[in-house]
Image 1 (cartoon, rainbow, N blue to C red):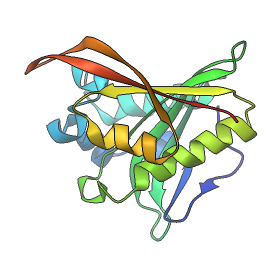
Image 2 (image 1 turned 90 degrees about the vertical axis):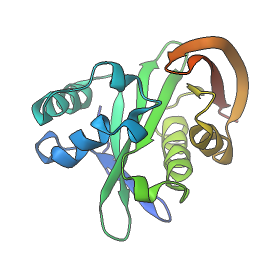
Image 3 (image 1 turned 120 degrees about the horizontal axis):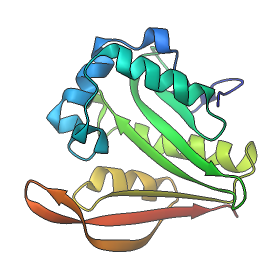
Image 4 (image 1 turned 135 degrees about the vertical axis):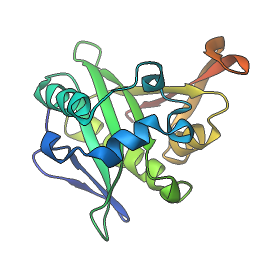
Length: 178
């Protein structure tokens, strides 16, 4: 699935990723232990840029998922991604996941702004009724970004994830169209 035009916020914009523009910097984000510590991709890391290019192309061609790059409005720099999907058309629901790959851009509110832009698009343009997300309990940055974007914590799945430190809870978040 692709956007007709970028989604613009105050400090960022979201736009479809072009597989041909996926580069070594993107691959380095996924291989960075600080960036991927709460991402499931760390369990099966892509070995080459081509692997990511194929993932981006297949997601762009999908009818049930939307993968967008998060870009700084001032420079156009690609700093991370946000994904909507899979979309369940019958229930009007979808999952949201994201990461900021550029560590120097962490803590600046870009993730919550991206969540807000994608949430509005999902409700207004795609007609979805509810969005969900989850994160590791130790990933307070992600949890706080969703809450700042108007989402609510809906629950906790105890001991959901296996980590180097032992079992960890899963925080479940959601946003209902009002």
